[in-house]
Length: 142
Image (cartoon, rainbow, N blue to C red; front, side):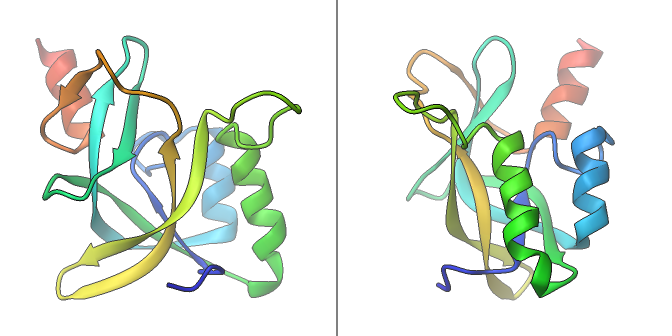
């Protein structure tokens, strides 16, 4: 996989269903390229959902985005890295890490960046559906 993919897979607060300030930023620099799946697992840490990569068949539902202008690559991803808590002070551990994944979209496999939780999920409740929006809708309806 290319280490400079201009694609981004989002599964949490950056998804279009949240419509927060960060999504407004994302939609300014990126174009929605459809729904997709990646191998991973969701957990709830008591405050918010987190996701980690897996090698098994667990899948996370999310959205794929393409960077609009190649010239914006460094700027756009630096801003997202700040939002995801990657750029920290010396001696601090980033809350998330940005890595490359394979995004499964119908018959296609597309390399893209993703932000994974960078801490232990031990003791966290698993979110079996792999879909944050689905989980939140079910939680709010109970």
